[in-house]
Length: 124
Image (tube, rainbow, N blue to C red; front, side, top):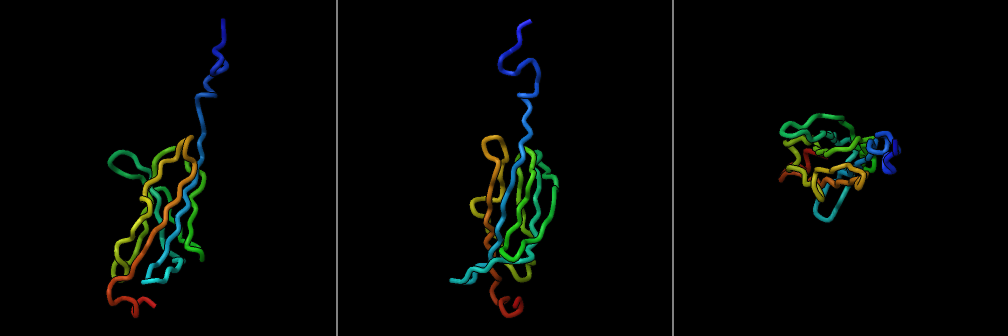
């Protein structure tokens, strides 16, 4: 029996165990000032058809950063949880979804936050 050169007679070469990461940075944009947001709650969801599946929640560090490591292949959505009394809806740059695959094992998302009108004094 001849072995197939592509898979050496087994299925191991067909199965890849992709592990990726998504780096998220959250900033507060006030006019010309940009400040990293420490303690912002960032949720990650795995996209699964119509209903995303919650994976994990983390708080940003002093540099406004959260890193989600060891993500298996798939598509993910990042959502920042904000206090709507003080903040406008966050803007995600480029977008809040990243697909991890053998061609793309890393993604990054910047979240830009702005204070609502009149909430600056209350927030600080």
